[in-house]
Length: 498
Image (cartoon, rainbow, N blue to C red; front, side):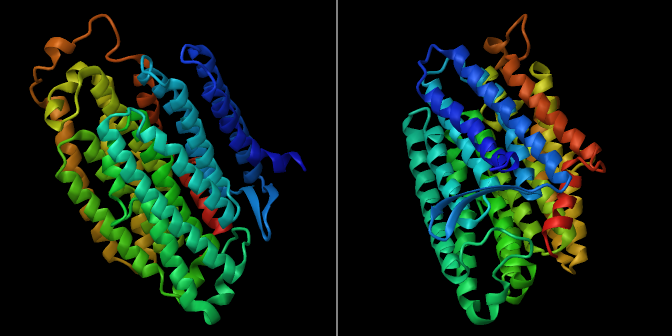
């Protein structure tokens, strides 16, 4: 097998192998654990960079091994795969540093970082999967890897949340499995391909293809937190802040949204979606989730729960971009996969910093926090304003393209949804910024004021500043060919026949 064929496998193994070794380490072997984590990150980033250069030059990367009769395990590096892999790899670096600082004195660190690495391996496996059977394998592995992270603290509350998470995700995975089986029976297990591969079957098996699509979207919608399959996400906020960041920005919800994009464009294709009348119901589901998530976020007084409902609303933009079946909307949905990840991980880093440094969990406790933690509050402000869609932060770019995409396909009413969602985002984010910067401080500063040090540990502060800066830069440099927007345009030009 050629070197180009081994690169996708190497990207998966670069986090899987360190993770398996970390499980065997003692708790006091912190230096070795950190070295393994960071070496895995560096190797993965180098392999991803090499593959990005290759794909930009037109190279093909494909690894295949026999798994089941007629259903091989396929890993392929195409432009769409690398969009998700690049996000996962960069944020794995930032979240690893954050988690090292966050869990510095916590027990069971080897177990945590072992499952953390398995989670990243499953996520990049989902991104690189070349067919539905391969996708299903890594999709189920992601459930198994994230459950121990959700229940890591071992409290009664975290165990209860873990049970809810497991019930939802196992049920969702079962639906995905049934959907994959139906599509395999109808069309075989072909590789993902531009324009899909079921189009020729619409005349003979239209009803079966419609049913398979509904089953698949229901299963993928669990991890994507589409209503009414979203109930696990707010409860999972009892997990440590690095896990919350992982669930919302890197792994679980993105896996579901990414899977829907694959299903729409690389299994069914825009033509079959239109012929089977599947796009409009998916669009309505995305719109309903967008508005529902924002309305529920307004009602939350716990900071992490407000951010969780914000995720439910924001991730549905990705599905909305897929459902509009237009080039500009597809660009908007794809680039929002990256932009939302950068902004949301920033917000969760900052929420974790507030909690660890000052014990802030409730919104009412944020009064004056910007005077004690100005850098963290500045990063939080960038993430929040970006979520609203304020230029030139990343969120503005993706929402702009979603709006243009709606106009392109004659769905002007979607502009009202985007505008209404932006107003709701402002309604639940701007009060947080006002409290943090302008409200009189509460009494937290009396016993939590630390002299002679940074506002919080540097390993907690640096990742938040890094991702906040990225959120700003990808908006300012959106016109560059190497920006997430430029890469998303490349994906649509090469891989989506719309």
